[in-house]
Image (tube, rainbow, N blue to C red; front, top):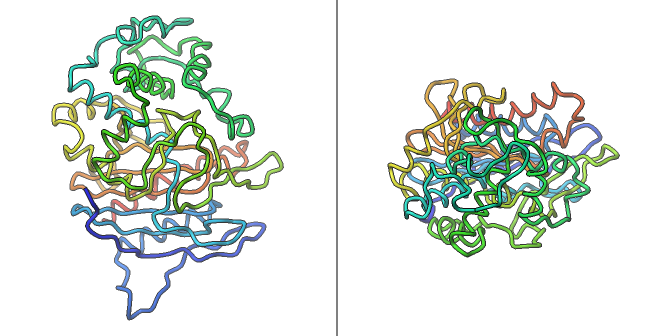
Length: 394
């Protein structure tokens, strides 16, 4: 599906980097050539400028309308070294939004009769999932999709060590070994806890059943049919972003922001390796919800949720690879969100097909001292608040 139109509504100024702040995005352009900003335009730009004021080097966003057209916005600085502008609808690392792509493939395979959601993972990956309190015969595919498996997270101990992972290739089996060396968090089906290990296993499951690399399967089944020309699963060893992109940043040991745009995302793999743009992420989630990727019956399964409120968005619930969030103005949106060093994305689609994605070019704890937990959490909430404010203004 091709996007009918794109209107660039606002561009961030190149900005001036100082010891304490980065200038926010501004409106520009001849009045005779540009339409007056709408209420939504003003709300989006206000939110992006506010995120830059909090210390994020750049913020970019896209609003996709029910007809598939989209408006794009930016603020801040795309490259702190040169002061260059933020590319409109630029490529960003999508982090855990990858999980929804992986979930869609698993559910498509279930529709084809290759997977049974309530069958133990041991059936499909015999002898692979075992450890202290961990038994693959007791963990179902559904529980992996919904984060109710009790499996420990393989990122524990490595996610915060950027120096160790930035340019290091990690194979899926190496990552699984890190997970299975830890004890189970709880008995399968008795609780909910987010764990990247669930989607690591689902990626292995996809490869076992299709006999093809998971990135290729995602490309063939989702990316190419939707004509997402700037969405891709990086190849093994690929560290640079392919297209126009804002640079991503993370605090170094000296407390200064370091450019981490060049990064080996293999530690994310089927749980977090994908690259996309705000508008294309909107279109993917719209396609999940409007029947282009899964059947109505499968979508009902995806949208059967359990409580997943971690304090960042009160009332959030997790389905099968997709999350619901209540809006402050009423109604519910569906999306996911993703965090990876250098980039954070949050997104949601409303009942009428309006989509919104916002991305910032650092993680909150990558620009704020992690010991200052209140400020870190405020920055996290500011990104989710942007989604709520914009979709409530739409």
